[in-house]
Each structure stands twice: as C-alpha cells, then as structure tokens.
Image (tube, rainbow, N blue to C red):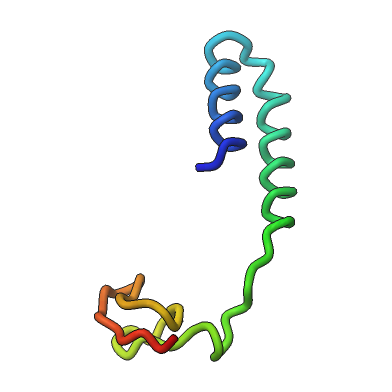
Length: 79
C-alpha cells in the first residue's frame, strides 16, 4: 500500500464516521488517483528475454526467479 492509498483509506474512514456525504467526494477522487498512478507506471511486457515458463505449472516467471510464484517449484535462475 503506497502513501496515496493510505491517505485515501484514512479519508474514507473519516468520511464514514463523520460525514457520510463526503464519500461522494473521496471515492471518485481515489478512483481517479489510482487510474492516473497506474497509467504512469511502465509495465514491461513478458518476453522470452525476461521470463521463462515454469516446468511444473507452465506459468510465466522471471528469469531470475528461484521459486515459481504460482506453484512453489524450485527453479534454476536463467539470468
């Protein structure tokens, strides 16, 4: 949870406890903030240079991974 999410969580709690009508303001602001934040993040596409398939579950994992995040299979890092 980043600082922005924490701030909005606190604002939501305050709004629920004291000013229920304030939720009409805080919820849309939180959604806009989250949408803008995620648009600014660059997501690296999963390619054969950055990912490999797990031999057990066949899900994509990072080349440097030592354990598959999907099934827990032990891996040998390919980096």
